[in-house]
Length: 164
Image 1 (cartoon, rainbow, N blue to C red):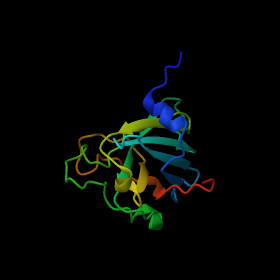
Image 2: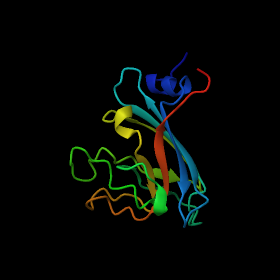
Image 3: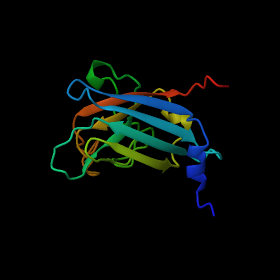
Image 4: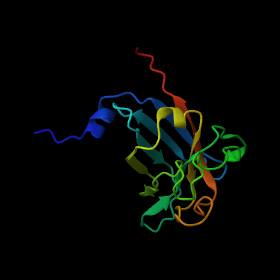
């Protein structure tokens, strides 16, 4: 018996609609990652799949969370200072920005997560940046959750298939 959900089937049988190749900044050059974005079949949001390696590890052998946000500008230059604020077209208070993503769990330098976002569409995310911050989001502090320094960045681009 197959117990897969609609979302897991979408990811397993699809090529992403958009991709961000994520790289660490000056203080964390070992961070590497990829974020795949899949428009759901009924245009009811996005499935987001992220994977990171080389994350800072405090060597306590305990989990550590990092904030992950969608930022306004797709410009990772100048050690990520050109990415702008969280994507927030509705001018909502934090943590209700459309750019507020779930925190990602670091397990000895590696992290993998998939989540569903019914509020975003492909057109909302293209040419914006996916940012990983040095600390977890506290979900209270304004305007961005006191998440600290931007430690990794990737620009979200439409995926181009070379296989037709």
